Length: 462
Image (cartoon, rainbow, N blue to C red):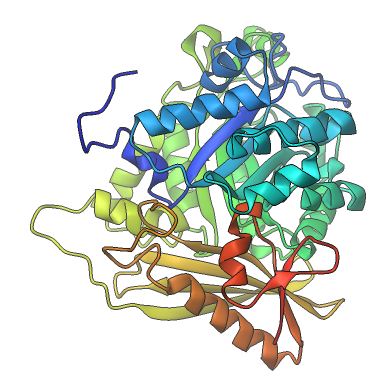
């Protein structure tokens, strides 16, 4: 890796959302349900190839969580990124299918690496991270819709998990059966409800061009995602189907029974999709990073998002999706001589989702550039209120560093939470809970929140 010049930040986009994202990968393991026909089996973590960047890094370190995390911390430091606030992502297949002992040990090693100290047990490691130099302010687990039971959820909460990404892929039981997915749409609905009720931010992995689908059907599927209250994810990763070595789909392709979408087909479809995504949803990624060596058919354009967003900007399309509107990217793309209006207004959107009432609270300017957001959920059945996310965007800053521009550390988070408290009072609910990364607890303590009796949520009587 080429070292940056003095004062230069290499790959600045990595931390423009306000945190430093670090992904660690579990050791290879087959899925219990078998193998989806589009998924390669190449003696590496399921659904990945041996030359995928995270696999290459993990394999060199023998999939050791401690070593992976410390290696990534070092890389971020070398690129001059702040590493105070870490978003930790657990990758490599279905983490919740591993033995419990492996899960707990893996999570503990992650926290030990952030703390730069090996604790006696996971409980001690979690406690230490609350005031550590490298704090885990967000933890993401990737899993399947059929492994989000109440027991699974309690485990994730105990680790300090704040976000769960589930492999939804499509919303069609016939396609699920054909591709050997191993679950049904009902599992997606049930998992979404349980996860949101517990306060998690929920992400869906969606695929375009699966066997037995077509562009029209895919478009209808995305409309259903945001029209049907059973779904309405907070985040999306959109992956066009590719034909890979080691996948059963390769045989279908060679027999002429399957053809992936062309680059132009994908681009046209995603442009249409981007136009219907609501303001409360963030598209995390478009395209997977697959090495050409393992690609038999399908586009290799991992930078396809750049072309799509350039097209949308040229056409002056009114895109509501979160990432397209973030202040960090707006500053990055600012043309010489132009300025960003810093007069903000508080905007609240209310919608029904997974048997609850959601309030999406955001700070935006007159150009709809997004500076910060809060997700407040009112659980209809239990009459409880929970903040599922508080996020202030902009270039990541060190803990305690003062803001030079509206964004991080400028008081927006405090105002967002205060508004969530006001809404909660209107429901005559006397306490508000916040799902919190272990490393973010100190922030909420300053706002009057304390750990609840189960040592899971930050809570405040209001």
